[in-house]
Image 1 (cartoon, rainbow, N blue to C red):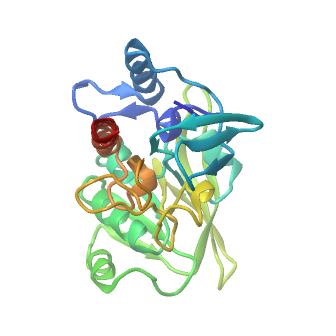
Image 2 (cartoon, rainbow, N blue to C red):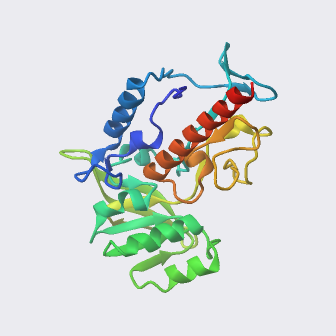
Length: 284
């Protein structure tokens, strides 16, 4: 397994994971990833904290390179994940996992009956705001333009929800908070682009919902993907357009993006790869 230079993916920047089966009290993101690592190592998996930088899938065995070192594989599971898009504010990093999130279904529970803000104007932002409105006392949706780019049905849900306030033509300038005695978000600074007025809104949570980018650049022109870059798999399987190459997790999932669904497709990909290799051995 090539785990990359930052093994663990998005769960490594998640504090409490509350929606993974088997942990009724919740578990820290880095802790669950450590348990996953120990489990796969128990079954003999060798983990390299290296990044694959080049591939050649034109013939089997497939060829892969980590810098100048070449590796051969009879089958491959691509599970490179996806990365949330951020605004680029230093305060996003400071309070990441301590009030700043890119996943309402992952972290919304922690803000029950509190006020939060959502940044964005597409379907992702609509879904996040609509979901949070069920939990939070108030949701303020910040959007840079004067109209949403989301689908009409998603817009209608948000526009008709009395718990959601929309700040049009506005941008998030800064996330405010405390770092001691405990790190937490206390508010946000917002600029209205029409009036140039700056205001501060007290909130407990900030959800950045400007989309995700699948980590699939390495496979462009090789594996089939959609316009955004999510890998396409054959329905009912994890097979890609190249026999012997399978895709699992967020790199092939633009809808759910949960740890439990990623684990599920990881299991599917392992079974698909094992069956592929077994059938090959039978016909050899």
